[in-house]
Length: 501
Image (cartoon, rainbow, N blue to C red; front, side, top):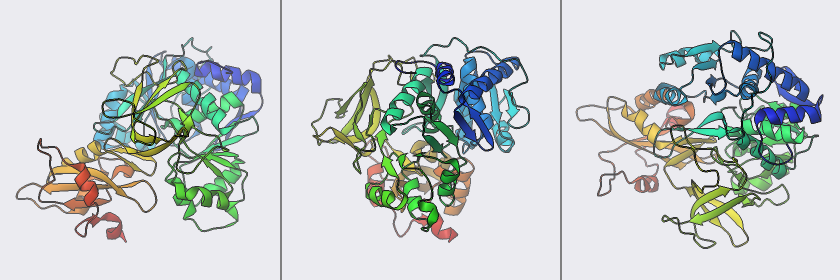
């Protein structure tokens, strides 16, 4: 792909023609060249079709990073089916909601998640990865489906800020533009080796595949992030480019120093939301330059800078092919230096999502509200301030306060609940929930946390609990979250980490 939008099969065919026998995919013990990856995608598409999957059908997947999941990513795209990767941390009502939104006739999962999925009420065709999922070779290969750039390639879930998580319709062309835009920002070449430990249910790890295809780089899908083993895995992969989340940076800095710190080839990393004070120490210790930027599941790399143009604490500048404004609550532009909501627009066809599942398609050139509070400086650089809505950012995951509150309220002793962020020792936030108790009942904070652990992914389970006589309310009966955030952790707050110590 040299210019303009295309499809994922188009990207793969073009890359196979240009890069042929060069290394492309590595996951576990599996190694594939570009040519081999195209052949496997065609064979997996054939296997899916033999099982009844058709163009436009939705296939959900719940799996850790493994080669079979990569095969499903490319095989579904080749067939024209829609992949719906599910967060492996989902359980309880969050999983039930995601399955309902996904509305997938087929679901492939690792055996360890099967019982959780059936208990959540899934009634479609269930395949166990590693046992009976559609695999290359069980049916003849298929030619690529004639999908259009605007057709949905994947439905990715993003955490809501005031309501349940929503499914984002990500078109084929969006991945192509992700590939071109981020490859340009990272200055990728065919000599690069990309390494990501991020999960394939996030757009970050998925669109890095497209970055490899447009540049000829090799893509290594690592296991779940481990701060203690990260640099060893980076060295084993021969990686030159890394993908991190801001919360991972202080975790790596907290590890004991050793020869592994510089025993690798990596020299740059895409690491959004890194604390500004850690940029230089990270580069001095590990030899890796951190590159920030703004993008989301719904959009693309709208704001960013290359390794030479980064400044700690700034997301970067507006990239070609996009427009951006900083606006007030009435959507009126504000002057440079004034905080406001970032709204963005693409001039690259279908570089943004086409909207949420259940909503009508968004016009390709419409302005998109991001919900992010930013400042545009006079020199054109953008600085992130905070989220406008009640989202909590923990360990690289966006957590909906609404979902945490909903889980807490299902405890029989809880009357009302309000979830909000409090500062973390690492970076980003910790989850705190303030609750009131039903009359005549008692509540043990540890029991509430255990209850929430059965309803929420691990990263969303509250660390802090405070039992209050009443929650602070506005005149219209809404909880004043600002007052709770200002109050923060008090001597009366129960701390799960302290209790476990």
